[in-house]
Length: 319
Ligand code: UDP
Image 1 (cartoon, rainbow, N blue to C red):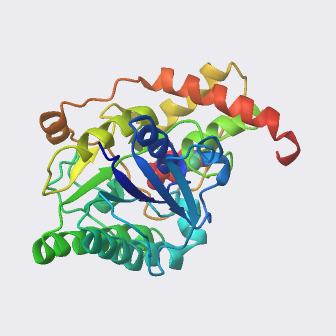
Image 2 (cartoon, rainbow, N blue to C red):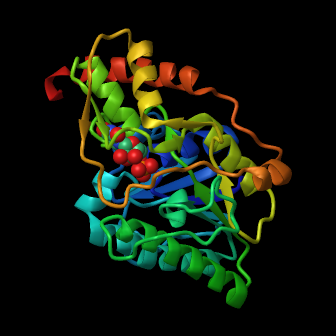
């Protein structure tokens, strides 16, 4: 039987690279596109020797030209850490708009299925809690996070338009906070920040008073959810994330405990428009794909800490 051919944009990123690995294991042929502004060849080095895997350095805001047939286009390209989209606001807007348009155009040309990696950021600073997919969100379009939130909201809108006008078989997943190996040490998100700080004996930087909440999903759980969702039809967005909610203070204390360090917690100003609470309602995913995250926060953090320790040992000169 012919292997399924897949294009994944952003395949050298944190989530994208884990997904590439899973798809190769499932015997798909994977073409990974990435411009490497936040992704890294390190993330996919182990896949480069596979003949089912091909990497093409390409900025998907420009026309995507792929030879041969395709079964699936997975659009995962985008900066995703607040620090990154503050640094690359225009690229973030372009990859969410022009990049999604190009990825949809490719799916249309190849008669392929399409999946958009959207985000819990489409809910902004949510006034409904937990967040079901039916909630329309509370986003500040002109704030510092607007470039990411609105790019993803546009991406969802154009995906729905292509579905309605061109009958593309689309799926939109809204990914909540995800963590695990291959996050960059200086990614800026809270999990890598705290782990890096703990491993280098620096105080943990809690923004605001640390009362804001997030719900953290281990990357393997997320990839399982994505893989299952690829196999079913879903005409509307589906939340994927771990519904166990923690305050940022609770997370800081847990990282201190798990790393066995005696460092302090210091408080820094809360960034503008930082969502006060976030927790996915995953009823829809549970019904549709019988999925629930399995990895508890302490277990996932332990694995991530071990990976960071190994990475730190390798790159001591860069710390
Ligand atoms: N945060 C923090 N200290 C840090 C980094 C982040 O207290 O060193 C907070 C941040 O203000 C936010 C939460 O942790 O409330 C999650 O931030 P992150 O950047 O990981 O992702 P977000 O969910 O905000 O996109």
